[in-house]
Length: 507
DNA sequence: CGCGAAAGCT
Image 1 (cartoon, protein in one colour):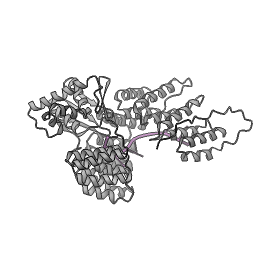
Image 2: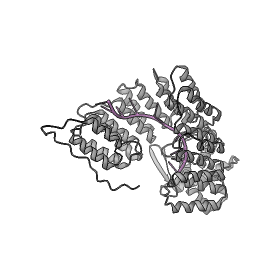
Image 3: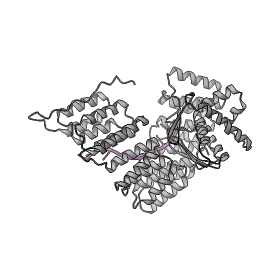
Image 4: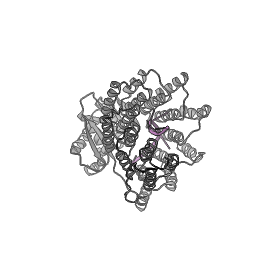
């Protein structure tokens, strides 16, 4: 769908002059709000609200902003929210700032969102009315940091939180735990958790997810058991965290047991719980069982569930099942470029060339666009970006040389790797260059590793999708160069020490 | 009164 050019602008505020203002029938207006999905409908309702004298009605403005900044809302909606906000003469309610801030924090354009979120925060601080950031403001700022992997900014906010004395609040600490964990510092997350005087269900759940994200499935589980012992009742999200932990650490038996336990707690699994179980079965190699699991769900599976399985078929090299799964996905959604890529890679890896050509053709026929992958790596406060198939970074050549250097070092220690990147060495120069071009992440990692001081911990943050090659690369380099490496892919961390990954992924 | 954690793949 391509939306018509956005011309909607918020209606001007009524000069509240009219003698007999219509009764603020805000209940009626509010009840219509959730049904407005298009910008046009929103603008119409907004106009009606202004006529009803609701332009600055706190509940109305907040709900309007919330709706416009909802997860997955198109950028135009976010821009509209901004206009609504800017047209309020004296936004004197912290909640409005908080809503807008949160909107930026979960926007799909992280880097520009960060700037905007910071501006909103600063503007709030500057308010002559003495508008103080509320706990929710800080939670909003922290979740913006979380989204961006901005550890340094997050630490700064932590200091600020301490300074204004909000560091005893359970919710703020929970946001801090989440921020630290998702920005790669599990140690700081644990510190905050242990320093809390009391912990609610959410605090426990977030800490469980934190361990899970870093590959410490056993620790996540024992935290869950400890939580129950202390009389805190787990909810569906806690269980999601536990299942997530199991699927990321290869704890198949435990995961299935906990999935079963849900009903004893009176909880009904949702699509995300099914997602975890699918992942659990599929990644551990029980591909057929996973297929059956999805097929027999009591609710309609989303393409996401099939996609999870497809990716696992790729990992296990099962092209036959992969094709069946791929067909199931196409029935539901044939516009997702990633599916074609995963499946065609699977075909390539198993030598199914005919099938691969068929997929490539299908992809063109369906007009699917491939977006180049991008990785970034932060070294000494400078962010370096590498795009797949692009040598624009000034150090691209150097990085590529370093990849070769790493490979030579590996040969010296006599390591016999079983991953594809070493095959590149065996290829002729032309082939090698082509292969490496498509592994920008690998280049970024090698570049970063060799440029940091010995023994340093390297954090790879922000949008890094760790391809299996990177994963092996990190493994090997941590061993050869004796570096501690933390790799972050979109959702989870891999800690390498002496060539061993803490995480059960790719087990 | 309204804002605050949460599966998978790219």
